[in-house]
Image (cartoon, rainbow, N blue to C red):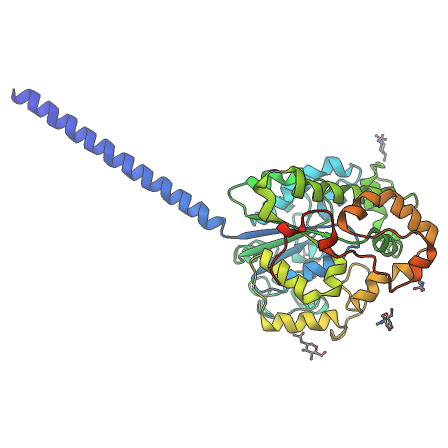
Length: 393
Ligand SMILES: *[C@@H]1O[C@H](CO)[C@@H](O)[C@H](O)[C@H]1NC(C)=O
Ligand SMILES: *[C@@H]1O[C@H](CO)[C@@H](O)[C@H](O)[C@H]1NC(C)=O
Ligand SMILES: *[C@@H]1O[C@H](CO)[C@@H](O)[C@H](O)[C@H]1NC(C)=O
Ligand SMILES: *[C@@H]1O[C@H](CO)[C@@H](O)[C@H](O)[C@H]1NC(C)=O
Ligand SMILES: *[C@@H]1O[C@H](CO)[C@@H](O)[C@H](O)[C@H]1NC(C)=O
């Protein structure tokens, strides 16, 4: 009798221990979930655009924000290293690099950079305010608005490890890329629970893009070769094959995000037209900041006024630099500078994208030169559902 009692007591104790272990385990798991929740409280923003579409400018609007760690075109390194491949083949390496950088795993650059390196080995590092301020660089504070030239002069020799240290201190990681052509490639990042990805799709009138590309033929030749899969040969775009590919990708991205795909992209995609940004910078910037969960400080607002009104001290214009010239004039410049024949050709290869994004086609040379004729259709008049992306003004 006593024996049986002891046994049942032992069983009871055993069960109690088991239960305690289970509770402990459960608590651990909950804790784990809680921790990964904390991780995803970061915001990851991908500015997805194309060459010469104002993406450097938009990148700066984010980069100067004190909560933002920004890198411009990190996947440039992928393309330069593997320049004999096609854009399609490189897309996955680009995707994986972006994912790593979003998670501040900067070791991904081991594949693309020399072992003995410093911050200045990173493509366009000095346009990243975060790499020019504390803790990446001791000379400036993160609330400072830092000019690229000043940063270059003072911060370039800092150890590469500072990139990671800095990255980890920010709530928002923003990357700008022109080297992705297919939105579905990004699906695994959208659904990744360790990430909180938002895609800002920046587009521009293809006629203006071509005009701007013509001013940078040399700088674009290698990338053209990758887009057209020429096995490393640099090419120009005299046959409009690259712009055709760019337009095709804008259609693919926009359609996939707004029509075909399931709701998981709904609050994670926003399309911005460069021309709207030029016309109403502050309204558009507030909308983008809203989307990105960032607040506009009064200092940033003053700076933004300056750069959109040509008041930036000591800036000169250059390829791949943001420009502070009257942005509306810049966005209309192609109308005085492209031949009607060229415009017809561009419209032919980009018709679908232009219709979809709300750019009016011109029929005659008279329409081209008549600057009172607005070719950027208001968003509301588009046949597509802008309403789902509209933020109250
Ligand atoms: C570090 O940066 C400077 C320029 O800022 C450069 O001259 C130097 O070669 C870089 N690399 C290394 C390994 O120090
Ligand atoms: C690409 O170019 C290299 C030489 O640069 C050549 O050896 C190779 O066969 C080419 N590949 C193709 C697919 O044409
Ligand atoms: C705006 O421009 C003015 C005039 O150049 C300059 O004094 C001021 O510091 C600028 N403000 C910001 C926040 O950039
Ligand atoms: C912008 O364009 C308008 C007319 O199209 C012109 O009057 C004005 O001078 C231009 N501004 C600049 C800064 O070029
Ligand atoms: C057109 O572009 C060319 C080359 O960039 C430039 O030299 C010329 O001044 C421009 N013409 C007009 C009318 O803007």
